Amino acid sequence: MKITILAGSPKGETSVTMQYVNYIIKKFPGHEYATFHVAQRIKTIEKDEKAFSEIIDSVRTSDAVLWAFPLYYLVVHSGLKRFIELIGERGAEDAFAGKYAASLSTSIHFYDQTAHAYVRGISEDLGMRYAGYHSPEMHDLILEKERKRLLGFAGDFLATVEKKLPVSRFFSPLSAVPTKYVPARPTAGVDPGDKKIVVLTDATDGQTNLLGMVERFCGSFTTKPVVVNLNDIDIAGGCLGCIRCGWDNTCAYTGKDGFVDFYRETIIPADILVIAGAIKDRYLSSRFKLFFDRSFFMTHIPVMEGKQVAFLVSGPLSQATPLSEALRGYFETQGASIVDFVSDETAGSAQLDGLITGLAGRLVWAADAQYIRSMTFLGFAGRKIFRDDVWGRLRFPFVSDYRYYKKHGLLAFPQKTDKKFRMVNIFLTLLAHIRPIREKIYGQMIKHEMVKPIIRAVEKY
Ligand SMILES: Cc1cc2nc3c(=O)[nH]c(=O)nc-3n(C[C@H](O)[C@H](O)[C@H](O)COP(=O)(O)O)c2cc1C
Image (cartoon, rainbow, N blue to C red; front, side, top):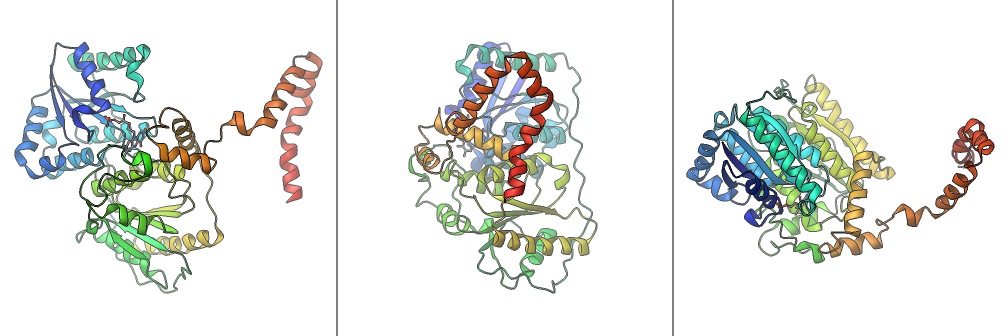
C-alpha cells in the first residue's frame, strides 16, 4: 500500500513528530511511504504550483493519508492550516475523496483533542474515511509501553486500510450561513471611558458580513476602538518552533518583522480584545493561526490575564465546536474573561445589531467592574498542565516561564498550598477507621459539616 504522510512541523525532518513517523515506517516496512513537509515548505508550496501538484499527485495515488503534526496553539501549525486552505482554493479535494486518513500528533496534551477533532472534521469534509488518531506526549516514544501503543495505532490503521473496513463519520458537513448582514447605525453610544479596546480582524473586501460586524461594533462606542487588520501587520513567516524565546521571550524574528512590536505595543496593553474573523474550513483563517502561533514568543506566560475578550465570527460557529473550544481553552487558560461569542448565524440583521451593541456595553461594564468570568475545566485543566510542565520537564528550555510562574504563584501544588487540609484528612481518615465514629460521620455529620464553612461565608460577608 502507499501512504502519503502530510507532515505539519515547521522543523521538517528534525521534528519530534517525525520520529514517531519514522518508527512506524521502520516497524511496517512492507509499504511505500511518501513524506511531504507541508508546514516547513508552505511558502514554496504556495508560490510553486508544481510543488503543490506533486503532493496532490501523491495523495491521488495513495491508499491513505497520515496527517502527522505537532500541536500548535490547540490546533495545527499555521503552515499546515494554510496547506489545508490551499486544497480548497486550488480545487484538489477530489484527490483526497475516498482515501483513508488518520491523525498522529505529538504535544504536551494541551488541547490535543481539539486538534484531532479539527483534522478529523477536515478529513471528513474532504470525503475521506477517517480511521483514528494517536496522541502521545512528545517524549512517549522513549517508553516501551508507549512504543507498543504507537504500533497498535499504526497496525490498526494499516489493517483498516488494507481490509477496506467501513469507518464511521463523526462530523456533519458545515452548512453555510444564510443571513446577509446589513448593519444599522447604532443610536446610543457606549462610553469606553479609559478602557483600551482593540479589534483584531483579518477581514478582506469581499467579507461584507464580517466587515459589517466590525463596523457595527466600533460604531457602538462614543470613541472608536483601535482596529487592526492582521493583513496589514508585517509578519515574515510562521513560528519556527525553535524555542529561542524560552530563555527570555526574545523571538527569533526580532528585528526581521513587525510582529513582536505590534504584539507588545497593541495586544498586550489592551483592556478589551475582540477577535473578529470568518470561519475558513473549520477554524479561522491561517492568518489568524499565524497570529496565535507567533504570539508564542511570550511562551506560557499568561499575557491575556484580566482582559475582557469577545469574538465576532462570520460563519457556522455553532457547528465548528473544535474552533470555539480552542478559543475558549486558550483564553481561559490565559486567565482572560470571555464575555461572549457573536456570530452571523442569527436570524437577521436587526437581531445581530442588538447582539453586537449589547456586547459592546457588556465588555465595558465587565472591564469597569473588573469582573473576570470563572474558569471552567478548560482553563483549570490547562493551567494544571502548564504548572506541571513548567515546574518539571520543560523548566529548561522555558526558563523565563519558570521565573514568571514562581514569582506569580502559578506553581501552587496542593501538597504545598493545602497543608491544613492534609492534616485534617490524615486525622479524619484515622478516626474513620473506628466503625461507630465512621458511621456517625458518614451517616449524620458529613452533609452538615461540608456546607458549614460555606454557610458561614454567606452569613459573614
Ligand atoms: C508555538 C508552539 C505552540 C505549541 N502549542 C501547543 C499546544 O497548543 N498544545 C500542546 O500540547 N503542545 C503545544 N506545543 C508543543 C509541541 O506540540 C510539541 O513540543 C511537539 O512535540 C513538537 O513537535 P515537532 O518537533 O514535531 O514540531 C507547542 C509548541 C510550540 C513551539
